[in-house]
Image (cartoon, rainbow, N blue to C red):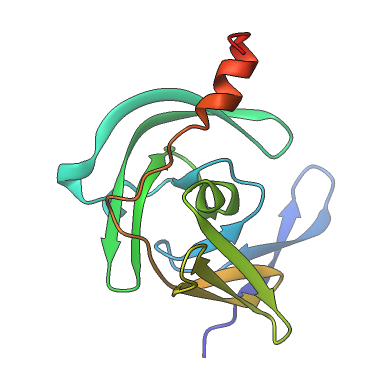
Length: 165
């Protein structure tokens, strides 16, 4: 059984100090459920349905406001994951499903007592995904969002922000 995290020791040659570091062993196609992600995100271009990938330029701020370039978006269809409107961020080391984007698409994310979470349609309550809590991260077991379900902006909020209301 592969461990989720492994510690390694590195020797700093100039100070002769040992430093412990942790490296995740998660698969490069694994996704986490994230309340901090503004969009569904991946740094792995191979995950995209190639015919769905479009160029798109924007900037994403991660961690301590470090800017990263968004260079495209598209859909991902895998046996355990169907997800539209995913941003491609080269160099991003984690794949994230955005709770905020799911909410804007009329889905609810419910955290349950046994350490998991479920994703349900807001209307009708159909369960479309589940995740398992592992080392503090909710790892997606499966998630099936129809590819025609996109995140449309709330035009009343946009108009208010622009001073039209």
